[in-house]
Amino acid sequence: MTIHERLLAKFGEDNQKLKTIEEMAELIQAIIKGTNVDEELADVQIMLDQMKILYPNWATWQQIKLNHIEQNIL
Image: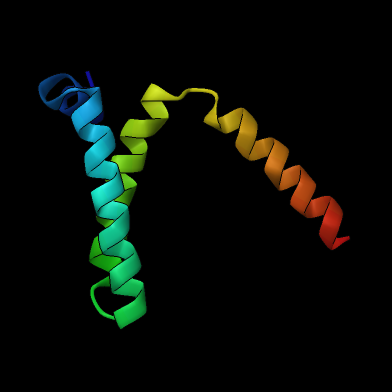
């Protein structure tokens, strides 16, 4: 079991979804202020790694969106 799976098991999906939102809000504030962006980005990435477990189709959507972006830039 990965650390991300263990976090989900320990704290539960609903709690980790809320924690993801909180961490994203902290990242937004860090970007606005221009301070601690690296640290907050790390926190968000940890939470996103957990969300990727809960939503395994994210990779398919990512590829669809990247293809769309690529078509629009060319």
